[in-house]
Image 1 (tube, rainbow, N blue to C red):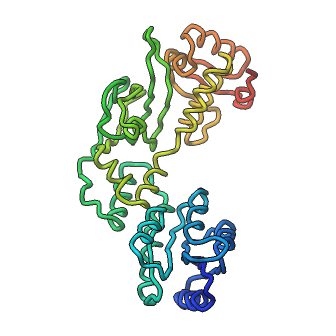
Image 2: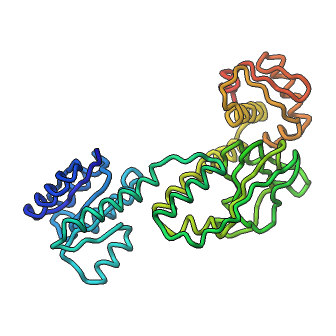
Image 3: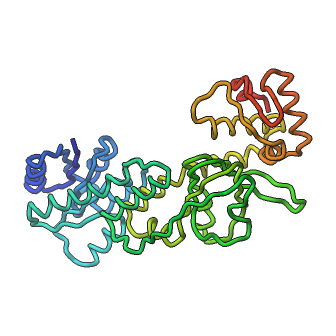
Length: 352
């Protein structure tokens, strides 16, 4: 059942509003001041909050400010219910992130319609969409029901890349973002000596190439297909329409994107501080985590030694020697370009 929290210090208004919502089959929680309201919101995580502005302990603006600072409550739809009707008050509340503003006395139908509209919009954030071309199109179609997306184009296209073909190059200006529909992709940087270092590995369902677009800079890395791949391209105009047109649409789309930034930062730190053996072991584990989607044990992958060296941040010769050591230690099995991981636990516990 949908839970709605009412934060209102006026007993009559609080009880009358609660009765209306209960008759409409909502589960209702109530709080008599802002401080109690924040506590109940953090404890119960309601589906929607209706909040008065002028209250003791903590006013409505304060409630919204506190809740917006915590990820668990920041996306809860928030409606101000108040007698304050000055334009500057409305602008202040909406500017802080309120979703709607209802003035007292209110019409019962107006209240219920506002609640229904906000709940419909928030459902987009909670919904999980497939990270495929079809999933993106489904997301956009549903987003159109919540927001004016008439500027969205139909120029999203599927491109085919052969193994080792470049998808974008360092120094180029981003024209959009990419979703890997099928295959494998790596992103890498080259130093002054022409040596490459792999900074990202992408599997089916991963987005890539969007950081430079968000920062409005040229690409700081190259992207190349590791095998024959299908890549879905979303133009920059469509991307910015999705992330700037509507709060709920933006939150939902960003949630689809942001799955690998933290992992990338962790890899950069490991490169700086870990030994070669540890880095090679971590690279093997990274490959297993990224591409062993079926849980295959033992896991086997085909990868050339140069790419392994670029992942581990060392020379090809060093990688060959290290893999030979791992083979002697029964951690892996090597046949030509194929590497089979025999002992994940020991690789994970590799001493630095």
